[in-house]
Amino acid sequence: MNFSQKLQLLRKNKGCTQDELAGKLDVSRQAVAKWESGQVYPDISNLIQISRLCWNQVVCKGMAGNKRILLVIFLA
Image (cartoon, rainbow, N blue to C red):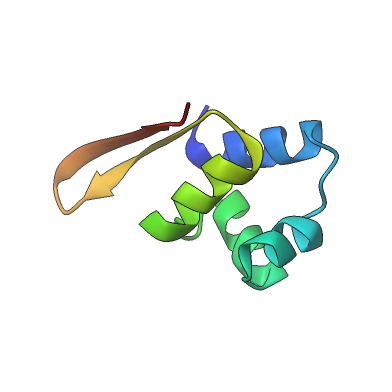
């Protein structure tokens, strides 16, 4: 499962709409839709906010140039 799929699944499991999540993060609903469709990834500050609002961890897999990256944020 990639980041966009996980974000959408976890958001829905929390009973939160894209618009509600966007309001909590102070971004547009379109930004959340793009994250969930895999068009773009949230920046690091939004990833941290997502973690704090909803979950104990966020896992983001992707590419940076020709290198694979894995970002895992754990919150106590």
